Amino acid sequence: MRLTDVAIPLGLGWSSPFTRWQGPLSEMSGIDLAVDVTGRALAAREFDPAGVTYAVLGTTVPQATGFYGVTSVAPRLGMPAVTGPVIAQACATSAAVLQAAAVQVQLGAHRTVLAVATDRTSNGPLMVYPSPARSGGAPRTEHWVLDPMQEDPTTRDSMLATAENVAADEGFTRDELDEVTLLRHEQYRAALGDDRAVQRRYLVEVHVPGRKGHTVVAEDVGVHPATPEGLAKLAPVTPGGVVTYGSQTHPGDGTAGVVLSTVDTARALGAGVARVRAVAFARVEPARMPKAPVPAARAALADSGLEIADIDVVTTHNPFAVNDLYFHRQTGFPLDRMNPYGSSLVYGHPQGPTGLRAVVELIEALRARGGGRGLFTGCAAGDTAGAVVIEVDDR
Image 1: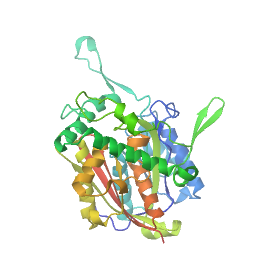
Image 2: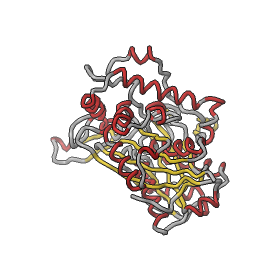
Image 3: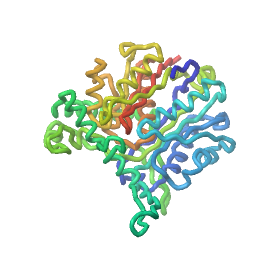
Image 4: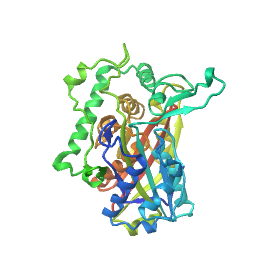
C-alpha cells in the first residue's frame, strides 16, 4: 500500500525495554503495560493526548479486560472519546497496526492517530474449549503461547522447522548462522555505549506495581552474552540441524508505540518527520517462514517507487539468524547495515510490539545519520511477513 501523506513526528516513537519470558514484567497485564509506558512516553515528549482522535491497538495474547480493546486503554491516557480496532496478525501485528492507523490519516478521516502494540507472552492463557461430544464431555485445551510455536495448522510444522527448512534449501552452515548472531550481538552492545545514549532516545521505563511501591524496569532483561566460544558449544535444537538456542530468539514481554499524522501536522509537532511511504505483506511457500520478509520488502519498496539500492538502513524481526542471512543473499543488502542497534534475535520477541520497536529503532538510526530511507521487514506465523518503508527528513 502506497502512502503519500502519513508521517511520524520525530521523537514520537518509543518502546519499553523487552524482558525475558517469566522475567520482571511477567505479572503485569499487557494492557496495563501499554497504559503505563504510553502515558509516560507522551508526557515526557510533552504531547497533548487531546489531539488524538483515533487509536489502534495490536496484541496477540489475550489479557484480562482485553475484550474492550482500545476503550480499555484510551480513557486511562486522557482520551475518553477515542476508539478504534484491536488487531492481531501474529508477529506481523506491528506492521498491520501501522497500516490500519496510516490508512485513517491517508484518507483524511483523522489527522492524528495513536498506534500501540503490546504483549505479555509470560503466563499466557490456557484456553479451554467446550466439547460436549467428546468422551465424558472433556474439553479441548490450547496453550495460547506455546502450542502455536510447535505446529502450524496448515503444514503441521513447527516454527523452528521452517528455519531448518530454509537453511537446508539454501545450504546455510552452522558457522554462517553463528557469524550473523555474533554480529547482531556486537551491534546491540555498541548501542549500549555512553551509558545507553542511543537507547535512552526511545526506550521508556516501566513502573511495575508491587506491594511496597513500584519497581522500575529501564533496560532490556534477558540478553545472553554471545561469544564465538559460547555459541560453538551449543548443540543444535534439532539433531542434525544448524539452528541453536543461540541463533534463535526468545519469548518476551513489552510494548511499543508511535503517533501518526499528516505530514504538515507532524512537522508542527516535531523537529522533523519520518514519512511512512508504504506498508506491504507477503506469504511464501509452506513451512518456509524466514523467506517471507523478502517478498514483503520487495512489495513495500515497489509501492514506494524504490529499490533496495535506495535504502540506507534495514531493520528486521529475525527470530532466527536464518532470516537475515536469507535476506542478505536474496537482496545483496550488507549484513552490517542491518539492525544497527541489535534486533529481536538479541533482545527477545514479545510478538505484537516486536516490529514496532524495530520501526522506532529504524527511525532513530536514520536520524543519527541525518536522514535517509529505511526498510523494516519481519516474518510472522503462517509463512507470512510484513514490511514498512520509512523516509526521515530531519528538517
